[in-house]
Image (cartoon, rainbow, N blue to C red; front, side, top):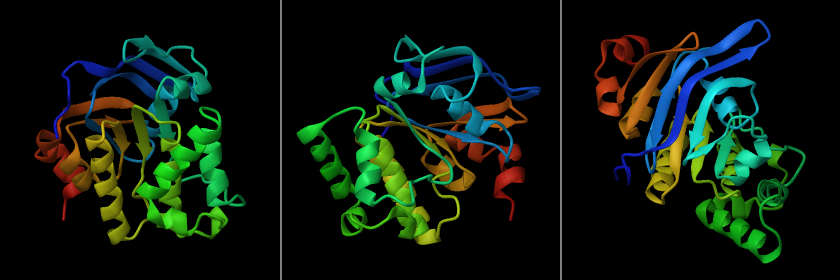
Length: 241
């Protein structure tokens, strides 16, 4: 499936993210088309997670952030979520002492109540049948793959139009990695725009409409998924061997 429109859904212009004396992102500009999968590649410390944190209002940032014609600059994180952006963070970060049910409830309770909240939970249980089986178990007792599914389901509880996925395949068994990438494609086909940070460059570029490569907080390469997969930089850095 191709993007539904060539007009940018998200536009990032001259973005900088600084933590004290350390500038994690410098002068980054990128676009994400509605209905697309866009991937951010780069080594650890390249600024990928900081970019996602800036988009969700978590990290201090300067520059232009436009989402569906709306400026995100200066917005609080809860406002950004209400406008349709959700983050599934690196490392899953589920609440281990709470049940699967409570984790899902927390993902949606700030946005809907009562029957509407129950309907969203039911929709995620349909999407992730294993979570229905584990519904009353503590999240800390789930496997890594099950926790990743819960983290994604929790992010989807806010009904985002743009889903930010930070390293969703990290540390997972190959079979579960396949499930994660199938899920990303399924979400895109259901109309959710995806901005994906992923170390598995080969798999990410295989499903990406467009990609951007960061080094030391700066953009060094961009292009379609196919163009990046064929570039010497990507082959040397990610696809060798």
